Image 1 (cartoon, rainbow, N blue to C red):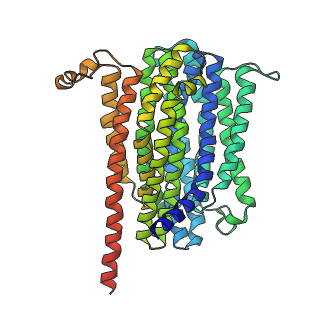
Image 2: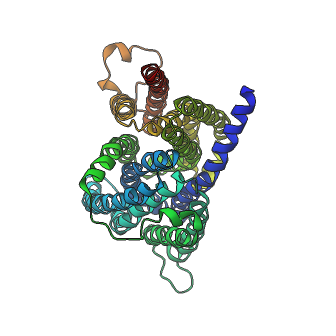
Length: 472
């Protein structure tokens, strides 16, 4: 009986998650296409796009986390069959997205100045700064898209995002081909062609999703654009209360990777390119457990909205197990095919060798990375976001970054007892040192979030039991 129930939940979760997964893979595939095409233009273009993407990703991932507050709120309304509240939540989330995206665009424009403080080749700096300036104009569209994305996913409608994202990926590849290398009369722009492609495709995502949703009957009863609504402070406060810790959580992880990219820049273009190749590919793989996390959030939120914490706990742990199973397979695949994967991005022998080494380290943290993202999704389904934020800050800013700096840049800064260990390096490990620290940081995150999910699920079950006793 238990096996049948688990099988039914896996099927329900997979039906919800696989279109999200394909859509997320397509979205990240645009970054993969950017980096791969820039790499075949020149090593300097690849390094410049890599640095620009590192800042761009940090901003959009943080913004994505802030926008995720719409997911649990809509999911709980769906579970409670309180559908008339959903349009109001979405409209207020769009106001929130507009405000935050304008702040993010200004921050991204200002952040481009950081490249002036690094020793970079002129072409690399020009491409990095230009990439950031151009793509900052995509942020309002990105924020609105993520609101509609969460609204649609929480209704159980995930195929629209998949179809639109696949269309955007095709557009991205075509525009890159035209602008990066200069075809059909366009002047070759190298890495800056990737920036223009990213800008156009983000707006394509928003327009395509709106077009689909307006014509689908699944959104008719909760269509948020049926009437105008000014900002409503109580609802905005509720959205910020849930979304701010998620945004900080996403910032903790994305900024750690972005800062590592900037610190690795001191070791030259080959190290930057190798780091970006490994990061780019693992980000692509990461979309699978991330999609499972979004699916688990929806399933858990709907169960809690229906007043069934036991089903919520069951759905959460099924999602975690499914994520772990995928992580084991991905770890084996990355370790086995690391040289072939690196060869997809570059023909440079030095970059290829360094990237293959980093991919081997990336294979080591697949299990902990998948665990932390699926478990965090389940916890957010309970509308709990502050505690996961604390775990992530500990993992990335207390463990990964300090240890990575010591191993990668300054092993002499380590305490004496640590330097006495036989495995401790005498010389800086450069990019590999940061990736070794990421393995440990992600292990801390995965373990901490597993313990937190166990406590949260038990607390909700206890509250339900106490409520039943009181009512009796």
